[in-house]
Image (cartoon, rainbow, N blue to C red; front, side, top):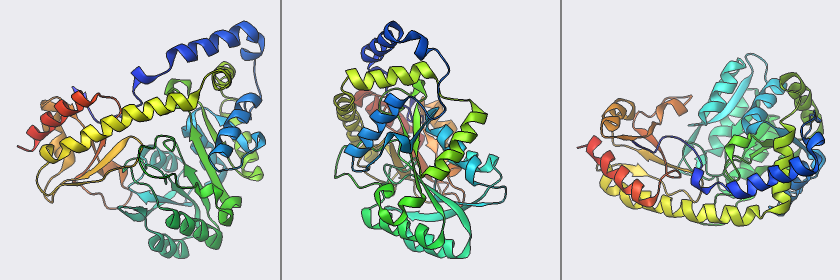
Length: 362
């Protein structure tokens, strides 16, 4: 089976040697501290390192602005606990990251989709919906979005910030993929826009750049909301694993994460390009797809009359898999949409997988 379904980092690219060395040093030098209970806010050294990385990327941040979480998924759960009452309105891009939709559903939120186009969320649609609905928050992945791979342009980010300031909703800016850029120029974070700085929360993760098994993420938020999330985290798990935080902090001190990420970007760019090169021959005539500047996903729209969910069984019979796009929609689903991930296979395997995929439409 060649699977383009999972949104997973490539395991052969993990820096196993560097991570093992970081754990060894922590256990040799500060074993009692690393194995003890810790503060809910997180390891001070790790928070300082994260703050420095965010500042270097154009978002001035202090260690005290941050809460370390058990993956950025927990950060989203904590925010939802702190902000969303049953029946409260949550705005989302349509389509949207599936686990976010699940989080909001468990909280009893009323999820309202905001239409998108090939450049992401449509500001005029957001303005119209926000004027009509008293929303608690907008959840958005503006850079290399999951599932579409789209990046929201700077002018639309500014419009989102202005809408939040005008209508009083929070912006939850999820950025798990931002360091995986292959083309183009970095677009400033929404959180860096002073228009909505007092109501924007940034979520980040080490899953895509270090290793997802560490389950380390972070939340950057204004003080009042951050404190509410700290209290929610105390009720959830007291604190994120002390030893994993200490090892990550040591890794960031002793290793060159930027150089490691640069190697990942080179490998992923080759794989993205291999998939883009093979799609014309693999998909039926009339299909459309985007060319993401980074991240892990390509979004495909099959011609009218094609149902990606129904075709998946046929694809699996040819030993290739993908994710149908319909479950990512909270509004009217597009049955012909498909998410393809290119990160976990070599260029040669991608070529073979696309040849198998072509048989699905034969």
